[in-house]
Each structure stands twice: as structure tokens, then as C-alpha cells.
Image 1 (cartoon, rainbow, N blue to C red):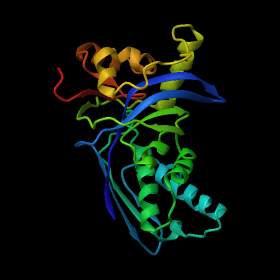
Image 2 (image 1 turned 60 degrees about the vertical axis):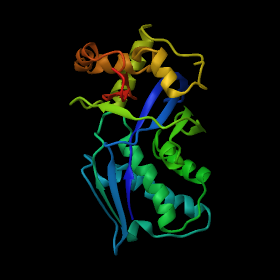
Image 3 (image 1 turned 45 degrees about the vertical axis):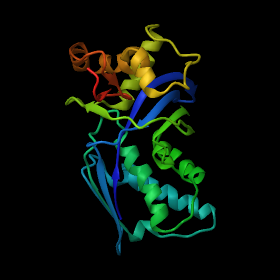
Length: 261
């Protein structure tokens, strides 16, 4: 089984509050189907293996954690599968890391979907999203199969949004943005009174191109200024880019609708 994995973009990302140590968000995720992608091959084997340029140990990899979570979930359903002994997974990475594109989450979420098919497990979308939400904030979106969704909570609450598919151009500078560091900067700027929590964000029924037509990038993404504070080189890039470019997630990628300048 070989399949493509595409990144997500945050059309907007607003932080509404906290749930314990987690930030509660409200965001529009869209799948960016284009040249940037990972390619994953899954096949049967006599022992588990996971290969790819991940930059982390197997035990910390979201794909590995998703397989573990899936096995544990199946056990609660009275089903026993030895996926950790019989799967070979190889990833050809094309989605840059530390770029706000959800590459690791995309790999994990899509692997859950495809493993469900591979073993004919018969899990529905709700079950897959439940498993995915235990792995990472963005994983549930990638298990859903949605191309656009309003995402809330800590990433586990999804509302499918019906809209046209868009062609995006993505620019990722040679800057690795650590999500935890950017959120930490957000917390500091919140404490300093530079930023404030959003009580609500109106207009979630607007199509994504409407947001990109009527808002500036700094007002759409609450992590934009924290990312610049954490990584000042992003500020220089921000000054050079036209207004049609927007900021995804915790960065460092910028994106725009193709054909706009």
C-alpha cells in the first residue's frame, strides 16, 4: 500500500483559552494538495520497522505512537492485533519539519486511515478521530478525510466545512519553528498584556478565500507575532512578503492562493 500525504494550512488560528496546560483553539484547517507531500509505503513484514528522515527516535515518532494507540484501542473493543510485529512502514519525507504544516501529524493520521483499510478493521471516522486525538493536536483532522474543517478544543473537535478546493503556493524559509517555543512566547506576551485571549471569532461560516481577501495575516493567526518574537528572522521575511501571503500554524511557512500577487 503506497499513498500520498499532504500538509494542512491554517487559514485562521485563534486561541480562546486553556484546558489545563493545553491551549484551546479555533481554526480553519485546509488540506493543501500540491507538490509538497510525503509518500508512505506500508507492507506486511515479519517484524515491525519504521524508516524515514524523522529527526526523532522511533518511540517519539507520531506514526509509531499512532500504531500503539490503535492497538490499545482495539484491545478495549476485545480485538487483538499484532501490528507492532507485522508492519513495515517507510516514509519519503517531502513536508518540511518545523514549518506549521502538520507533517508529522499528517503521517500519523493518514497511517491510521490506511492501516484501518489494510487490516480491514472496520473502524468508522469517529473511532479513528478518537484514536488520533490521543496522539497529537492535529492528528484527528488527518484521520477524518476532510479537506476543510473548523477545528476547536485542543484539535480534537472537528466540523467539516464544505467549500471548493483551492490551489495554494507555500513558501517555507530555512527556519525551524518549535511549536512549544512559539506557544511559550504566546503565553509570555499574554502575561505582558501585549496579546489578549479571544472570547470569540465571528465569521466561521465564511469560505477560506473570503478570509484571505479581507484579513491581514497578523490578524488571522494569533501565533504570528509570538513566532516572530521567538524567531526574529521571520520578521525580516514578513516585511519582504506581499500582503497576499499568510502564516500557517506556529510557522515557519507562509502561503497564498495561486494567482494572487
